[in-house]
Amino acid sequence: IQLTQSPSSLSASVGDRVTITCRASQDISSYLAWYQQKPGKAPKLLIYAAFTLQSGVPSRFSGSGSGTDFTLTISSLQPEDLATYYCQQVNSYPLTFGGGTKVEIK
Amino acid sequence: EVQLLESGGGLIQPGGSLRLSCAASGFTFSSYSMAWVRQAPGKGLEWVSSISKNGDTIHYADSVKGRFTISRDNSKNTLSLQMNSLRAEDTAVYYCAECQSACLWGRFDYWGQGTLVTVSS
Image 1: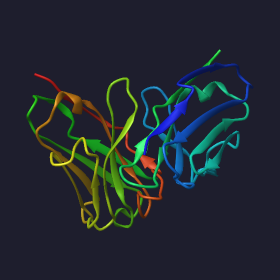
Image 2: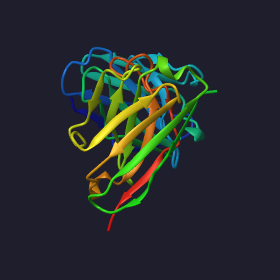
Image 3: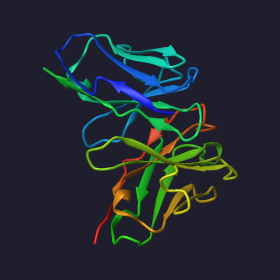
């Protein structure tokens, strides 16, 4: 299953609403997770099962979608959100990740 | 506190072998499935392999099948990845990750800091 993320990069201002999309090549139900990777660090789980917020993750992050189309939204971008974001499908093997979306702060 | 600490990375010549280890602490290791994920320099994430909590179910990415072997020792809280016939394209940071009771339909809750494997002559 291929995951296509868009955009591949974006630049936004603090306080902006940011939306990242992830499209699966076939139906994956709600078996999708989102990860945040800051420069030089390991990935961190943000959202699983398409919309469930991982414990400790700020509520400005949210996920939606099912089937083949998914969205990660940051409601109010903060300076610490500078990172690359990846979606991952866990519906079937081989598990796959999207190509990533690099978020920069204007 | 959950901790995953990878070790064993380094510089290795093409065709060589390397064994990575991941020492787990802060959770009941034997109750969780585990996985390896890698990231080539400047590239995205690539799932490599997963193993069930008792080791009886294993999956590999096609890119490593037949060359890599995942294993675990629940008595020592350790996950391993034996990598043989290494190629330049295996150069990456390798992360171990805990993925709940099953990686399939699950989530990768915790990740180690990674260990760098460089395959070059």
